[in-house]
Amino acid sequence: MAKRDTAVYSRQAKFVRGLLFVFMLVVALLTLYPIIYVFFGSFKENKELLVGGVNIFPETFVIQNYIDAWEQADFATYTKNSFFLGITIMLFSLILSSMAGYVFARKKFRGKELIYGLFVAFMFINVGSVSLRPLFELAIGLHMNTSLWSVVLISAGGGQATSIFLVRGYMNTIPKELDEAAKIDGCTFFQTFYMILLPVLKPILATVALLSFRGGWNEYILPLVFTMTTPEQRPLTVGVNMLKNAGDGAAAWNIMFAGATIAIVPMLLIYICSSRYFIEGLTAGAVKG
Image 1 (tube, rainbow, N blue to C red):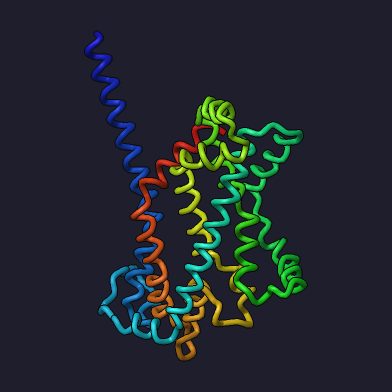
Image 2: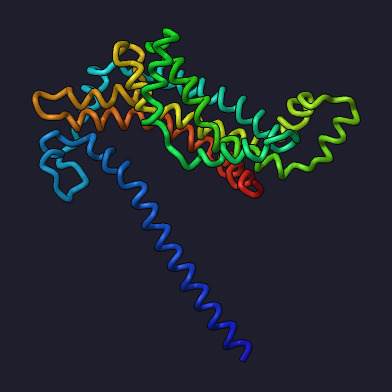
């Protein structure tokens, strides 16, 4: 009887694992399909893209699309601007989220839970389109409406809810005995942070760094608005979209797809090199909140 129950349970477990595998395969295909479509579309002629069809592979591979995209867009300048946005937003995010997460996890003060609750609530609220006009008018008042620093400050200052949530959750997994030992040795609250706990936070900070860099690299609406009069400050996301108008009358989707493929490569390489730290920090930081 016990052997029969074990066999039935084994078959059910295999069936569940099979369903889970199929489900994950479908999700992976749905996630990868846009990237695959853009990649192979970058080798097609524009008329082939405009006609459409079910064939994802090009009839003939047109390398000229990449040459046209590189020559018609100032990719060197756009890439430099994208790296500036990604790196500066990442640095600001690391500083702000690590310190805020430490304070929310270790410091006791009046209204802490209310403030933290508001931060978490804004993880689920997108006020970008609502706040864009007042932010732009504020930048005009500060004479920063033609500078990428406005994009950096807005993105780094307004998008830290998720990072703070992750850092605080990871901080709660660190024994408080470390803080107490540091306090006995004469460390102040801030010294305990940067001398004792900051080195322990490396996995979650790697996650925050990757997420914030990706956010800065992929930012589109803010750079589009703030670089309307300064084309030389456009990042890749804005510059690549401008390639759509490179055709004669019809939208040049093939050239834009080629530019988009070039723009995707750095982000993919960064993720491939740091994926282990990203997953480690993300799972560890989600244990406690």
